[in-house]
Image (cartoon, rainbow, N blue to C red):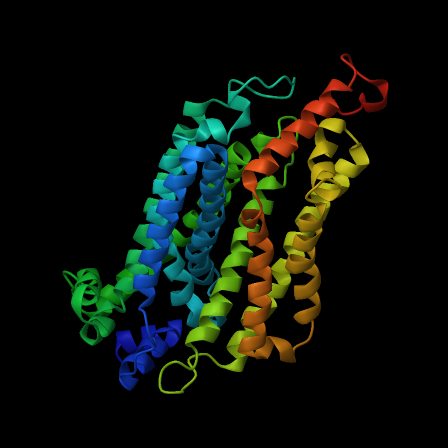
Length: 407
């Protein structure tokens, strides 16, 4: 008769990959260790930031702003991926759960970037300066208010996420720790401190993550929506979008799915030539990617349609600057990379079964979302506000009958 830990492994379907990896004894990397590369990249980014903050501070701080928002939504998507699978009892995705949970390693860096952003907020939050508009809530939008409010919410969300991950990993820690060495063995060994037996611990971990999962999902929706309203939508005073929150965190969720596809393809044949995920695993992941490519685009179009139909200048400016302005080529290229190409490439069943093809499509999606970081964010920021000021100078001072509806 199988023990509780064996039942846990079969139910979750993901630790079998760890077992195969340890059993082969093969090393997956050739050359520099991924941890070393990550440390070098962080050091290089820090040096670049400190060099740029003296000469072009707005560009430097807008880069911090973009990377904080992009990687935070992606990292939280990894925790939510595991929480949704637990809450919905979706066993199909359990083989990818550990890959998704690994993205949460960025969360401590995310909070550090958020705190750092406070000191450069004057270069990011344009409403801290003299902005003449009737559609700006100065009571809500204050420098201290934005960072204290969102800092508390992020701290609660991250703390709950770390507790969830602790119990999610704890049941497998005794299986993995003997196969590791050095600081990794010590770190994983801490997860199994005060082990009270397989049956008790498996039941305890299952119960804890089942309770935390729904809370994390709801908190993810609320906290990231608030973050997007305060740090993104507020940069264009007068522009209001009810779906801006979902537009932001669903984009992060889609990026997480794309990253999981890339990582799964990379590691699939790295250990002794035996695949860790089969073609049907990739098929299920591909279907989920396809669904959220369509859903993210639906949110974009739902937002655009309302603005187009209402035809209010203070709302239409948001799309005009992007769709027909100096950055229109990049804007439409993003739509091609995030929607048009993935929609065509993932429409059939067989393409989703090939891990390399799925990874190729995932790379296209991530490139589309990352385009906003490749352009000069400081110049974009200044160009946007120069257009807004020019448009505002030509607007009538009083209510215009053409736009009176909905004001």
